[in-house]
Length: 305
Image (cartoon, rainbow, N blue to C red; front, side, top):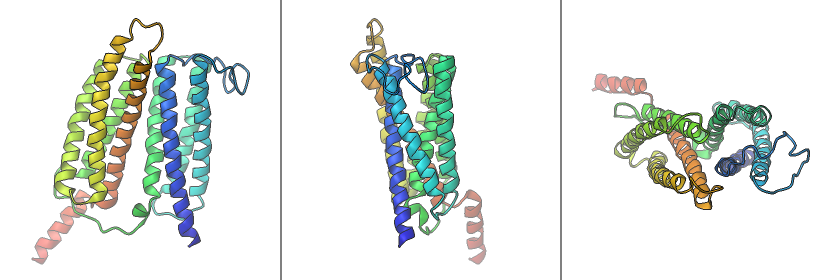
C-alpha cells in the first residue's frame, strides 16, 4: 500500500512539474515578445540584488528567472523521488535526464546574459526548453497507473506503422519549433519555418488519420490523435494571427499587448502540440507490437491454420 501511494504521489508531482514548465515557457515567451532579453546585465543576481527594481523589461526577465528556479527545484525533487520509487522501465534514468537538461538551460541562460551571441544561444536555449518540456511531460505518462499496469499488446495492421508515423511527426514538430525559435531570435528568416509548417501539417494529418482508422476504439491512442489535430489547427490559426500582429506592430514604439498575447499563445500551443505528439508516440510503443513482432504473429497464425 505504501509503495502504491508513493507511486501515485510521484505521478502527481510529475504532473505539477509539467504544468509549472508551461508557465516557464510562457515566461520565456514574454521576455522575447517584450524585447526584454537584455534588461538584466548580470547573473545570477539582477543588478547585484536578489530582487531588482521591477520596472520595464526587468520584470519580465526577473519573472522568467524566478519560474526557472522553481522548475529547477521541482525537477531536482522529481529526479531524487524517482530514484526511490519502484517503477517499470527506465523512468529513473529519464528523471535524471530532465535534471541534466535543467543544468544545461541554466548554463545557456548565463551565457546569454554575460557573453551575448543572442541569436545563436537564444535559439539553442529555446530548443533545449522544448526538449526538457517533452521529457517532463513524458514522465507524467511513464509514472501513470496506465503505463505501469500490465497491458495486452495490439497488432498494427497498417503501413507505415503508427509507431513510425508518430515518431516522424514528433521529430518534425520539434524541428519546426526550432525553426520558429530561430526566426523569433533572428537567427534566420521565415521561409524555413513556413516550409516546416507544410511538412508538419502533412505528417500530423497522416498520423491522426492512421489513429482514427486503425485504433478508433482504443481510448489511449484516440485521445492523443484528437488532441494532436486540435492543437495543430489552433497553432496554424495562431501562426496567421502572429504574422498579422507583427505587420500591425512594425511601427509601434514598443510591442503592443495583442502582439505579445498572440506570440505567447503561439509558443505555448506549439509546445503542447509537440507534447501531445510525443505522448502519442510513447503510447504507441507501449501498446502496439513492433512490425517484426506483428509479422511473426501473422506467420504463426497462418502456419496454425
